[in-house]
Image (cartoon, rainbow, N blue to C red; front, side):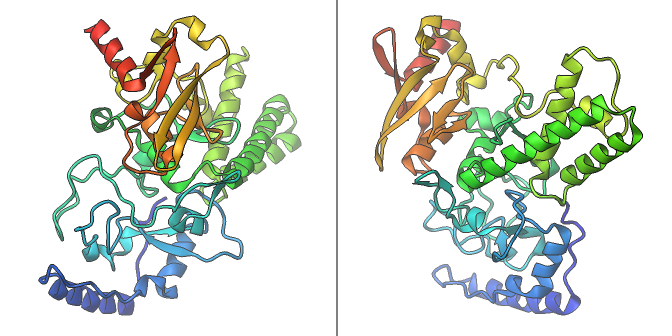
Length: 388
C-alpha cells in the first residue's frame, strides 16, 4: 500500500499545524493530559485514504456498510503495557501515520468459532528494540506490528490453501526477531486476528477460485477467448485494490508452482510469468530451518525429536495463563494449532491462548516425550547443549 500520494487540503494542513503547536505547549507538563481535535475523522482525510485503497489496509477486507476507522499506526495518546508513555502525540496530525482500518482490526470483535479473538490493535504497539524518545526520531524503532505501507513488511506474509495467513517460509527471520524469540508475522496475525473465521473462509473460497482460473488459463491458453477470460479474471482478483488481493496473488503463485512441478516446460504468458518467477511462496513446505530458527520457531526442535513422538501425527501441549489451563497441539511441520488456528511460533500461540501480550511461549508450553514432561524451553536448551 503506497500512501506517498496522500496530500491533505492546505486548509486542513494549516489547522493541523495549529493543533500540533498546542500539543507541543502541553507536552512541557509531563502530567498534563493531551486533548486532541479529531481532525483525522474528517472527510478531507478519510476520503483521501479511501481513494488510495477502499478496503482495510491491514486485513484487506472491503467495507460494506461498516464504519471506516482512521487508525494511527503509532498510537497517538498511549502505548499498551507502558503506563507512563503518552503515545506518539506529535504524530497525531501527520497523515503519514494514518492507516485505513476495519473495526475488527482496530477495535476487536473478530471470532475464532465461539472464542473471542481479542481487542484488536488499538494502542498496542510493541517494539523489538528501544522506543524513541518523546517527540524524537523514529528511524531506529523496530515495530513488531507489520506496516501495510512498508513493501518489505508485506512481502513477509503468505497464505496457505485453507486461507490462513502465515509467514512466508523462505523469508529469513531478522536478527532482532531471533534475539527476542518473536516472529513479527505471527504477532501481527495474532493482534489483528488475521486468521479469524470471516477472513479464512473468504480467503479459502477466493484461493480456490484463483487456482481454478490459473489451471483453466494454463490448460486452455491456446484458445484465445478462454485464455483472455481467465487472465482477465485473475488480474481482477489480484490487483491491489481487490478484496484479499494478497491471498489471490499467493494462490496464483502456488498454482504456477504446482504447474512447474508437474513437468510442463511451457511457460505461461503475460503476467503469469511474474508469479512463476517468484518461486515458492506462502503455503509451500518450509525449507530446511536455519541454525538460529530454534530460538523463534519449532522446526529445528521437531526435527530432533524421535519419530515415535509423532506416532499420532501430533503432540499435545499444555499451559496455564490468566484464562486458566490452555491446550494446543504441536504438528510435525513445527506449527502449533491453537483454537484450530496454525501458529509458527510458541510465543504467539501462547499469547493467543492466554490472552496475554507478555507471555513467553517457550516457558508457557509443556509437552511429554518418552514419558518425560518438560517445557519447550527445556527441550530447546537440551538441543542447544547437544549442538554446542
